[in-house]
Length: 191
Image (cartoon, rainbow, N blue to C red):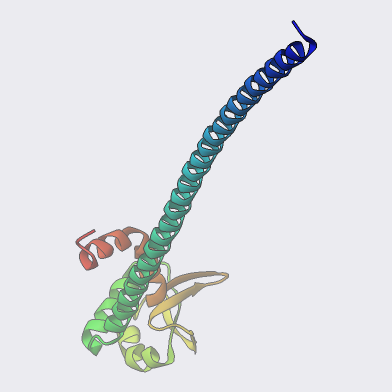
């Protein structure tokens, strides 16, 4: 074998080896790129799923907050209507004709006539009630005070340092705890 043929054979083997190495490197490169694409797609899919989950959590929270606000507004409106019904009840008591109002007042005062005391009423009721109180409770220690009370109706009974508040406002306040749920069920039967 001649030197030229040996050189040619070495060159051919080197080219074949180079081509083989290049093909292996290209295959490794393609494998690495494909692996990187799969990993990138997996990360992208994972992030998209997390974003959708976060988005759903945010939508659910906003819906929950909106629902809570809606219920609070509805409750406030109901409470406003119930308070208006108590105000209207106070007005109705005040609008009773003189005989019925006096009967209402004397009924309230009846339990106090044995112990007596000074009865304070508002200025309007003083004109409405003065003769009746004196007549109905003559012979008892109940006396109509010269002072007036800043109340819508009813009375305040003073006995020394003790005062009993039987104003219309206080009487309605006393029944609120018991009557509010009943009033609500009458006003809002669907709930």
